[in-house]
Length: 157
Image (cartoon, rainbow, N blue to C red; front, side, top):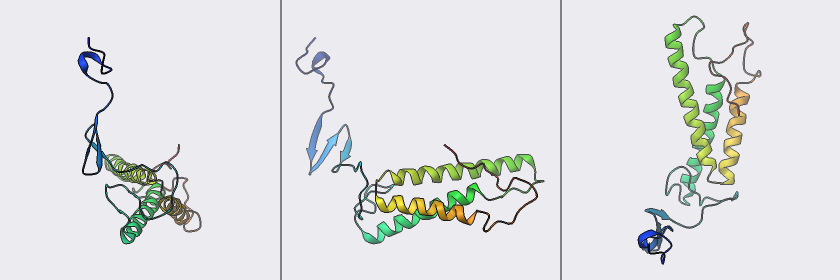
């Protein structure tokens, strides 16, 4: 056994890195600078896609609008009735399943956008959820005779 390099048969356990054109390659992944681990302000954020919005103010505002719209849509999907009470149970189950998949997928996308730690993204996500919830609140909803006013149960932790 050759233990000079920290492993068996001369193989090191630590990942090897090399530099190419100013980027660091670690185990096949490009690393461009540090990832933010605290909230920060500004347009220089990576939101959902590599290289986007990349400091472009117009793209940053579009990203904020998309996160805002997804947050509102999550709340609307959670508090809206799409299935009629006397519909076919199989069709109703399929519709509920598709709505659930859409809602969970959008919620994960918003969560991943929040992982950019950008303060603007955080604010529009919270504001979108608040506005979506307000539109579905008693202020805009007619009271129904039954207790069930939505198809999907509210998302809970």
